[in-house]
Image (cartoon, rainbow, N blue to C red):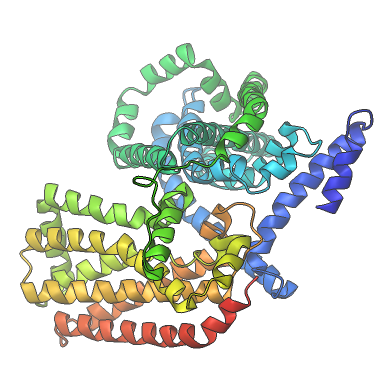
Length: 558
């Protein structure tokens, strides 16, 4: 912070200049990306080689995700090209794919926009220095822009590839489309920033901090997936009325028309399209920069509550620690959305299974025809689905890192570290067990599963939950990070979430493959109980490690 402080003093009233101004902004942006790099080193104990390796691994993984999304978008673009390309209206394909890419990028970045822009830990420190609020906001936006650009590209680049394939390779068209892609990244960033700003304003006026963000995110997520699952109907409607829709967009939404037209190389479209994006981003940035200080101050206010008649409620150490974990979880929208979404999905799947029970039965029948109608196959399928859902509820994985610099408070208390560890494990049960029971009962009723098969599936799911809780805590103990300024970083960025989430998904894939390979000669109930014993055995090994070496590591964490 010394370098930043010196540059800030250089920009104080009475001094400055363009060079110092740009230097201060670049220093702030560099600071943001340096904070990201610390996530891959996970503290000062890691080597530079380990940090570079972790960063490279994460980039490769994100590239794989973007390529997977891009492949599906390419297939959609290819299917639409016969109707939307040609007749001098090639812009229609780009309009549709731009909207999909921007919606996807906004959906992903809006979850962290509130935390990254308005609730970073060092916002108040930076605002206390002679640094313009707009610089702080712009620097905070820089990492978000990179993410927004990547997911915007997953929708735009496939359309560019299809267009070039149809009309032929033209270097000028490629360059223009790359420029438009960079510009559309700013549009996605602006939209996610607005949503984060609105959520932060609502949160500041609510007692239940974080719930407004979760509700808004779930609504947006639901709308996005509703549109995604209705894409075939929308595509057919677009095919049937493409000319009428084109005329409507041209007449009533000229900015969208100009952005789409720019992709085709039209000079008029390029000028007006870039101007449209610049105006939208500029207006949003101007409003956010002018209200940034007030939003940050309101977001940092604490809310006090009365307890009964004024008497302090007491409880055992285990109860107090568990209540602390519950308060920590419910106070963070990022924590709830990233580590609790699986629980909501299990309940949603249960409701969907009851409403669409014929589809569930039909799907199970198809799997039985392919892999053989082994007794209790439904229980194995149920367990695998719940394994995937539970893997997304990695509450314990960031729980140590989220203590931040205040971890010394827990270390100084006369409490056995194992009670602290077990309070985090219990919180994972609170998140997962209700969803497991609701979904398993719903599927058992729909598929008419036997009681023995249902019990075996539930036991396996509880054992898997135990394993994920201990595994996530073990990862965080081995790779802690306390120097973050945004709680979204330890929750969903860096190596730890990737190792935890994709490692558990890989485990589920292996267990699923073994299940289908052995379903002919090993009863499903026996297989699930064997898996339960293995998972509980690994969990016990981690428990013993926590009780021994884990205690010592926790005592000296900093």
